[in-house]
Image (cartoon, rainbow, N blue to C red; front, side, top):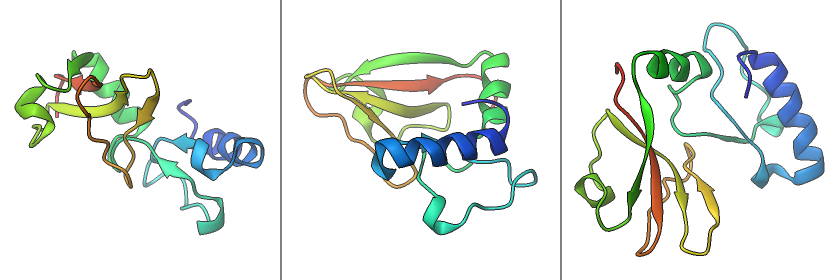
Length: 122
C-alpha cells in the first residue's frame, strides 16, 4: 500500500501471478487518478470502496486509530456499526487474519477479535 495507485496496481498484478487472486488485495484507487483496471486484472478491494489511501491518511491525521473489539463486546455486537467505527480485519481464535473486503464483510465468531478504524473525521 503506497500512495501511488499505479504502483499498487502493478505490484498487485505481479503478486497475483505468484500468490493467486484470492490472496492479494488493494485499496480502492482514487476515482480521478487511475482509470479502472481491466476485470481480469482486478483483485479484492480492501475495506470499503471509498476508503482510499488518501482517505485513510486524512482520517489518521484527523485522529482516527485502530481498536480491537472482542466478538462478544464490539459496538452493537458487530451489527450496525456507525460510520465512525469501520471493521477492517477479523482475527480468528486460531490466529488467522481475515480482511474485510468490498465483497466479503467478515463476521466475528465467538473467540474472534475485530480490528476497527475508529474516530477521525468522516
